[in-house]
Amino acid sequence: MPSFETLLADVRRTVREITSAEVAAALPAATVVVIDVREPDELAGGRIPGALTIPRGLLEQRIEPAAPDHARPLVVYCTSGNRSALAARSLTELGYADVRSLAGGFAAWKRAGLPVDGGSGGLTDAQRARYSRHLLLPEVGEDGQKKLLASKVLCVGAGGLGSPASLYLAAAGVGTLGLVDDDVVDVSNLQRQVVHTTDRIGVAKVDSAARTLTALNPDVKVVGHRVRLTADNALDLVAGYDVIVDGADNFATRYLLNDVALRLGKPVVHASVFRFEGQLTVFPAAGAPCYRCLFPVPPPPGAAPSCQEAGVLGVLPGVLGVLQATEALKLLLGMPTIAGRLLVWDAARSRFRELMLRGDPRCATCGEGVDRAAIPLVDYVAFCRGT
Image (cartoon, rainbow, N blue to C red):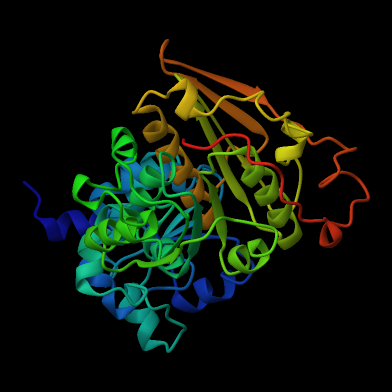
């Protein structure tokens, strides 16, 4: 039976190697995909800029989403070049046409004095443990987790939708969570607003939510805005955040939020719930469609009963709020979102439907020729409260 040394020597005879200088020359043109196959605990000393991190033991399982084009050249590296040689052979067997192992590994790269990224992204050992499952995802990894920790998300509403959305955003490590809500916790909220607890009845929702979220993840800074979003404060409230999660319970706030987000170029993750049905979409920062493409004008007062009047299944906002958190994280990570589509969830029938949304070229706020900087901010009559 051949020894490991024999096996490795055989692999090295068949696997092509590439020097650190050659990789460095190829990086600016993005002609190669560089994959770091070391383990997470080896990354503290840094990594090659732009490299994807996929531990050797998970390489075959996770390579396809990271490198779907089998014709694009791949460079794999480890610490000294042994594991990467074995990895290169495996990738060749999986059908990748041009795979090379970095000669001498990351150690040779550092000896050559070439640029090194922080690798762990400045994460502490505690953070690497907390976000370990994120670090394994090629779509997130260290760079993605750094982005999340540096990001700011504003949740408009700390109620049925804002509760699950904020919980999962906090758990994911979004660095700053803003909460806008002027209400206090009521016993009737607790059937669905899971960020609050019975002992906090009468407490401001933003304060109650902050206690839960910081207990869940001390990395997260929670900023409570105990106000109602109005034309007077909307620009100041929204301007400091990267992504807006619309958990509003009334049409007035939804229209105002749409208009201020378009003025400031902020994406909005929208959801709404009613009885057994909910809907979700993303209104992009730089393009159509927007909320007014979907609903051009507010309905007349009394036309839309509130959840306080019509009821809502308690778990429904939980489902939609988690989907909102998902889309918000994808926006922060630069991944494709549901923008341009409307997802409708019928909880009674356990059925998802998807509708296409198109921008209205005549839309008053995102249509052709509209000066977004001049969009007026108007306080509309509040039609629905109590979600």
